[in-house]
Amino acid sequence: MAVIKSITQLGQQTAYPTRYDPSLLFPIDRAGQRTNLLKPNQSTLPFYGVDIWNAYELSWLNAKGKPQIALAEFIIPADSPKMIESKSFKLYLNSVNNEHFNSIDELCLQLKTDLSLITEATVLVRIIKPEEAATQGIHELKGDLLDRLDLEVDASLAADTALLSADITAAPIEQCLVSHLLKSNCPVTGQPDWASIQIRYFGRPINEAGLLRYLIGFRQLGEFHEDCVETIFCAIKARCAPEKLAVFARYTRRGGLDINPFRADYNAAWPANIRHARQ
Image (cartoon, rainbow, N blue to C red; front, side):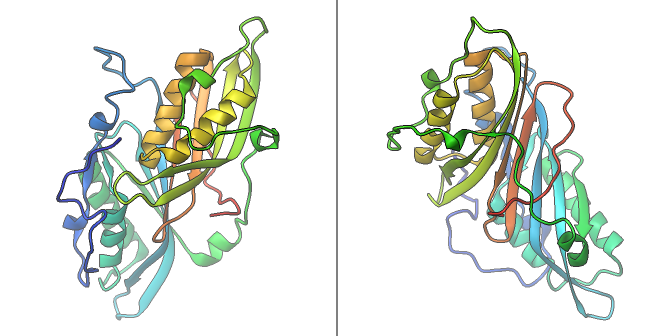
């Protein structure tokens, strides 16, 4: 379970800012969250990837003081030393509401500068006008739906990696598996986090029933979005030994933000940042 420093705003009653304030951003060391995932003396990550954040409530003032609205996409490298606590991110974006910017480019540069500084990595920022976002529509993750399986499940049990296995007698195959039943809980507030997950897998056939039971087991766990995806990735890699693996989760938004971590161990393209029905 993740441990958060006491100075974080997460889980505390907070006054919303009225002035632009980048000091509201609160970093969390990724290394501390990954202690149990890495082997002893392992210095390199077993995956690469990105965290794709979407902001649906971005607003600022133009040079004349007129409010502007847009959506924003933020892409944070998975190997950044720091990740951003979600509530602090929301407070920071709220602090932009009454700040004047001469252009979208100026706003974009300021956001990139602040976020790159706090994560100690280069963060990509894209401002999206509402009319552009409206053309993208809603799309579900592609793949074979694990949720079709008619299983008896004890949803009170925590995720158990012993549920994961592959058929070592079979030839390697390529699989793309999807479930909409992933749920975890904020490690500080206990609020539920809901997600759909896509697993691209090349190796001996994975036991689909065991995989679905494992994913359902996250309902009782308190972990951040990024940690859940990395835990799932490392568990499948360790238990099923696929030759290639990619895990992508799209979480529903909270407070105008959603977080969509992607992890892979091969040169896979970043997944398309397209909303599904629950987002």
